[in-house]
Length: 153
Image (cartoon, rainbow, N blue to C red; front, side):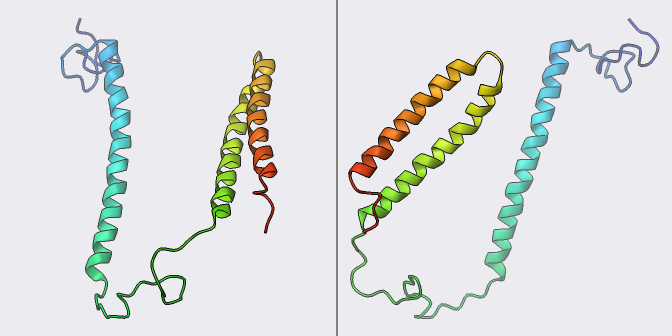
């Protein structure tokens, strides 16, 4: 089983450069390479988290801390708060935000659909599925239009 150095080409096999002399089968070598690739990603994530932690820690240590009564007041849009903290908000702003989210999700689904639609053999099925999806969105938009939510008042 011993041969010329580097004859086997498998790490861990005798005769391989840098081999430990312990036989390694293909599955173990594949698993080792797999986890080595993920260890690089884990190390990069750890470096990123440490970078953010060090930046926030340095900011906390280096910033001046001079609390004054003016700095401790509640600040809202450059206007001193007057009255209670509980205020009524018109519902139509939430509806516009909700409609935006619906159409943002729609655009997120359109790109993968377009890529699958271009693949051979999926044309008719994906076209029917997308028309069903767009039908649901159209019904929701029609409902919002009938309720008068889309009219600025």
